[in-house]
Amino acid sequence: MPREKKVEEYDVVIIGGGAAGLTAGIYCGRARLNTLLIEKALVGGLATYTNDIENYPGFPEGATGLGLMELFHKQAKKFGVKFKGTDVKSVELEGPVKTVETFRTTYKAKVVVLAVGGRPRITRAENEEEFLFDKGISFCATCDAAANTGKEVLIVGSGDAAIEEGMFLTKFASKVYVSIMHDEGTMDCNEIARNEALENPKMEFVWNTVVKRFEGDDHLHTVVLEDLKTGNENPIKVDTCFEFIGYVPNTEFLRDIVDMNKQGYILVNDKMETNIEGVYSAGDANEKFLKQVATAVGDGAMAGYCAERYIAETDKYESQILARDQFVYVYDASCPNCQNKLKEIEAMETETDGRISFSKADVYKSRGISNRMGITEFPSIAVVRYGKIIDVITGDFTRQQLERYL
Image (cartoon, rainbow, N blue to C red; front, side):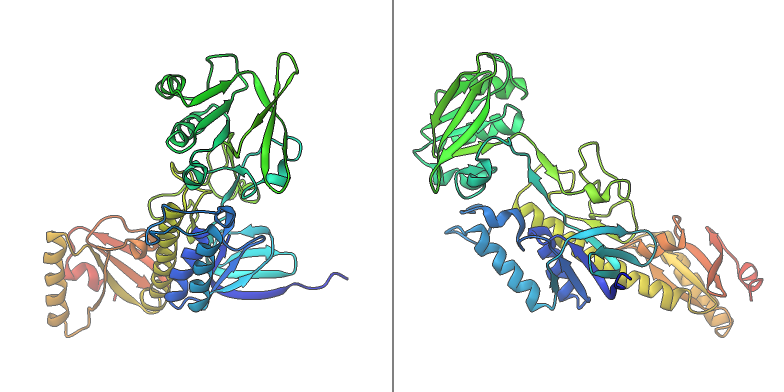
């Protein structure tokens, strides 16, 4: 018989241990939430493969990606975040209790933060695996441009990212070759970038070519291009090859569960909320313009903060709103009419010696409570009986209306 899985319960389960996931963990752990972070590979994500990060604030001398992520990891552990090195097999995210399945364990949580990141699309040419990341193949010009000052590099790709990053590299490198699979003059980027690149004296285009193989010892020194029309090989000596042929989000296991675009990037709002209540997404798997450690940190901070707020509001809703029969005055403190009505209900409480009394829920800073109550107009009065909201009164109300519910 198959062994029964162990079940562990947490407030928050974070899937993914890159910059976004670690930051979400720091925020959740510091809020004293019982938090688990699951990472199947290396804690720190893709940033750990970057030798030099010089644009992350607070490090004027720069930092290694591994070193920076080790600091993130240490800080998350300081706040009590637990770590599991395993692969997530499936998730069930609907409902108040979320389930994350791994090979040996079922994890249950009130909130799940998706920080699954992504991976650069690679050429799959010969020997490519030997030189990935810190051995000559890079996927981030912003990260590795300075390290290539005065050197010759090769760009693979002709989209907006490839051409714009190639022009950025000309500020540092002595020569930027660009391998393009199309006929001469044809690129996939916008027309302005194309024209600027063609006029850049440091850029040399190698048309109708794809990468055939990578050569080197401990570090890449040659990229062999193949001419698509003649089949001839063209070896180019370079210090680094930058591949900009797309990016693949690690969201395959989330298909048909959370809303995504056609490319598989997760759709979120400005609070990192997905289409599922209590499920947030942060980092490079989100549909976003810029993928950097700094932007991942911002996403993770928002997701972690909102996770804590969601749990607090859920607890308040269950323990204070639904726990007893009562009237709940739901209002926005910034609304003058709401303030006037607040005075009316306080007077009503005094006049009836507390026979008619109210709990108050101010939605000025967050509408999480009102959303759970299904209330969108303010002010409103929710009538709670037997652990349920049986009616909602909006607009004007009278003492006689309320007394009917007593």
